[in-house]
Amino acid sequence: MTENTTPNTDETNPRSPFEAFLFHQRRALEETGKALEALLPEGFREHGAQATREFTKGLRVLMEAAVEEVKKAAEKRQQAEDEPGEAEPPSGTTGSTKVKVQVE
Image (cartoon, rainbow, N blue to C red):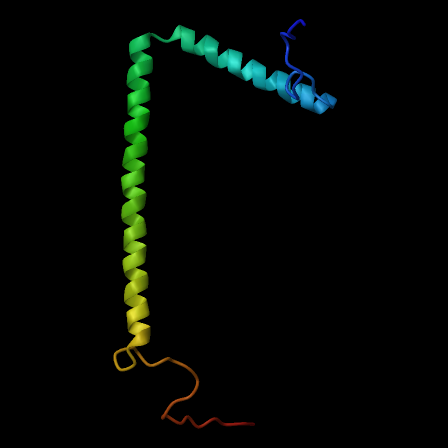
């Protein structure tokens, strides 16, 4: 038995011309990324990757804080709705004040 060195997958054997186009575009993008990576010094790549991780951590902290504030506001609103005496009366068209309207 001989082994097949090129696997028969959808990526290597696309079904339509559009899929073939997408396959080649993906490969071109990968190779372009490798070419740009080869131009950058190793230290730059290391520090850039670390900066990206720190930026992501900072955004995560910010988002978690925002979620906590939204939860607190939702709980406070729920408590205000559950306690009947302390909530503001709903404003509407009915009330104890009468207004005279002139009709021509």
